Image (cartoon, rainbow, N blue to C red; front, side, top):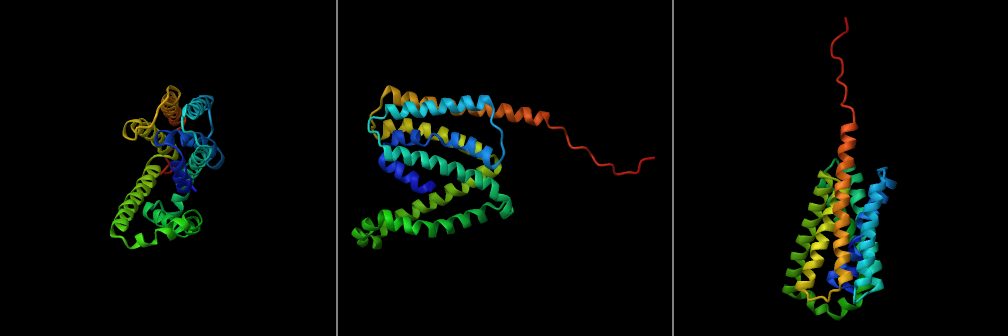
Length: 236
């Protein structure tokens, strides 16, 4: 679901709006973390999420070539990205914290799960271009894309393992905002004041959320009593 809706979003929207459409990842991550991991949500966190949602709404209204299908696909992609990071953190102990093993299982599952989706969405395109399946250039490009896709999967698992699903999604949102700004220059996408304001609002809400969570984690850590040392000797 994460990769499918991600590609559909990129297919129907401009590159500059693509990352705005997927900016709700943090919002889903907070609510789903509360449901699946039992992590509480403070009022300051809710305020930060409101800023991110406001940026999403502004970016949507400021998009010139708006696509409902692309926007909905971006929202669904955000949902599955959050679920992926949360369940990665939750499942890692089951595979002995071995990120290579988890990545292997994910790739095997994706291999079989994507077959019906490829047939349904791309079957006609593949049949019309079947002669290109013997092209060395095609397989070279596919191999390079597969290598980088595999590398991204490894880095994602390592980041979630070393930090948290929240940190992973925050860094992804910040990267997305920078990519959106680069898209205006590289791809020549038309921009509006509302669209650019939406990008910076999403980025500002994400950064503010980072500081709020850092402060909350620091307070929780200082409030946690140190573990008591066990008595090793007999009392006299």
